[in-house]
Picture (tube, helix red, strand yellow):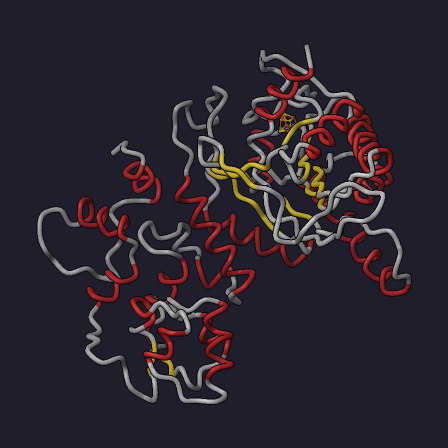
Length: 439
Ligand code: SF4
């Protein structure tokens, strides 16, 4: 197989990995080296199916000794196999970089022979890139669960970011769909990388020029919709991962069926993109807005609201905490107001040091008053003309597409008023079907 065919096959096989993101690393170009990395991110692109892909996202090989039921590369699939040699991959990357096609490399792999062998191949490719070709661009490498700690350590010294895919949200799902993997085999390398990052951080304090271990940290990826795990379970797991393993990001990948199996959604089922979207919104709230998973979902409400984003849904369920006085509310409280983001809350805190803010000022500061007006007071007063009714508030919290779905499916017969407490008749999956024209 020639190099171009290999590239076609192995970049296509890598499209199910969704951990494309900003690089998080700033590294200026240096004399004698090629490339640089900026923290605003490596080049992104979007594939036809809407997934975010980096411009050179590729597998070392798509041959795999494991048989994960959801994976296109599993050993029982009758599919063409290929693999790069480390030299081929390094050469390809540097050629693409020189032509300005890419700004970095995202390298993953099937497990060839055994985890150690696979990891050695990846290390050799990255070593050639870094040491022989002096490539200083961004590299994200997938750690292979089960590989020796020493190999993971070497990989981390060559890559900017490492990730270990958690794949499925529960041990039960792993046992069912990925029998060669276990929670333990995934959490052990995650813990090792976390410890290495900590040690490296303290080394860097003492020795400014100490080599850096995965300076952009570690991340993971979870498949959504292949198993019955609920949003509640997924969000709790996510929170635990951020706390325990200090992950930079958890990525969610809406499952796109590629294999026939009685344990999986049938081929042709649309990926649950709305669910994926809600999880990213909630993830954002955990990382930047000070929310806890248990505030957003609980045992009784295990799925996100199909029409409302998680922050609006939380606010509507806690109306007793609002309205808040914008000139006095703490930063943490402001962050919980629909229509105020991190930037907006910071601007408000700064601006009110010198003046008492009005709704006009808030508008100038970028606050989305269409949403925020129901939750704020300025100098003790609500915005002029604002009438607080369930119907009005709910309408302004919904996006236009959610509103049209609501009218079409939730209350097609009458012009009855919207209610916070009405149970959605459509589930997230139904809304997803509406959006993709299946309902
Ligand atoms: S180990 Fe990775 S590549 Fe191999 S079958 Fe499982 S998911 Fe696919």
